Image (cartoon, rainbow, N blue to C red; front, side, top):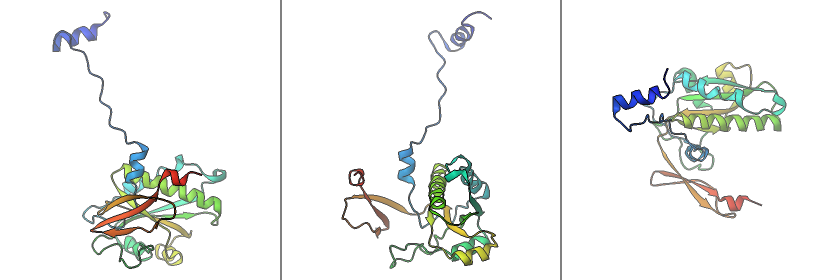
Length: 214
């Protein structure tokens, strides 16, 4: 084949001087963008149904994560809309820092969950693994256009019995299409850090990087 055949053929078709354009790559979300969107949502759009394959895709990040002593002791039980979903929701407690606000509001209850258990007892190492896993799964959900919240205030024994699990739940990751607006508010050390709601917006005070650096 002659040298520059493809370039010459391209010019014959599209005109002299024309050059093939570089392929357009999909826009990449920066880590900062994902972190900023990764808020703790308590209200969800019930017209959007989360499917099992989506929860499985979120769980699938775990084999790529670090684990203390590489024990990989966490196990995951996905739950989609249905009788199991109602059982999970009944065992969760939302909005502990805002006791006067009934969260989630009626009509915005979540319907999809990932129940996280462990094959060994709860230790500091297990809790570190748990934190890494939950945050990573949350970021994956955000990358998929969803949102969620990590719930540790759960009725563990009752949830285990309701779902017939052989392992005790350590946490529940709520997944859905967010139906509320959340804004971060920069504050400084010594300021009130309790989140609050005003005019339908959920505000979350966050210390600045300067205040966090010692």
